[in-house]
Image (cartoon, rainbow, N blue to C red; front, side, top):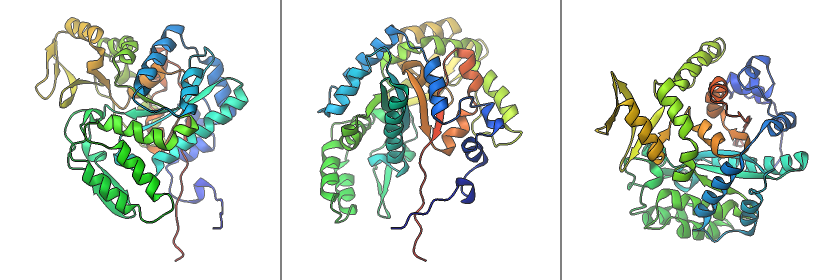
Length: 377
């Protein structure tokens, strides 16, 4: 195969924020202050502080979450290295798409592993690659299928509520179909074996995804995190309460959007309250109604004082939306970089003043690898 390299701008396939980010355009640097290069990583590392208490809680949570796995030595080593006060992380994340879903999900993971290695050599301190499982998303239609060799494989057992908690009822049929769709390639039998060992009845989608991703990338030291964890959510309580009292996301994102739309299309619009409430079978918005706060879809109702107390007592019942989730990630990880696609870049540029207002360090945002296959014709 011949490889020819061309500029992103020459493809006609990428949105203006992507091209401006790669070109280090001054306009986008207003929103993403740190450039996606080694200098940006150095600045992020120099500015990143992470308390001993937070690190202890994070490492204990990760140890619990990985306890169900037959750990690769490289992952066990990285979990241990993360306890070092100097250790940092580089993170990517995605929804729990069936069998990892689109090909760019493995790309993002491999980009993260490589960048962590490069950063560690340059910074001369531990840098751990992390995959954030978006277990709290609730759009089952986005995660219930995979396309293998042109064949769409759909799992009909998907239900409502946070997708990570969905039980893999009836998944054997889809696993068998996926194994057949892999074809006769030299690694097909190995991948089929991993699929059968990962996606089993009795597991949740989050558990199966963790097993599958670990089996594929654990030998490279990838650490996998599930943010739907009571101990980690407790670290997020100050942000939860700030959002409920002062609507900090709406105020800062509206300000950013006014500046962004001078050149770009705005990706996401903030709500008055950018939190969901979790209960069995539901991930529902919280709205303010006069002097009360109501969880939609028949959920509970509170006064502000009752709601603040509920967030303090049961933070695991609250879930950030797409705009607050990056803040949650940066609250619980000693992170210096995030790797995402063009769509993710579009909402990260909305968040500079949200991070600033909450006094949470904002990471360098890198673009994942993109690739296109062309037929002979």
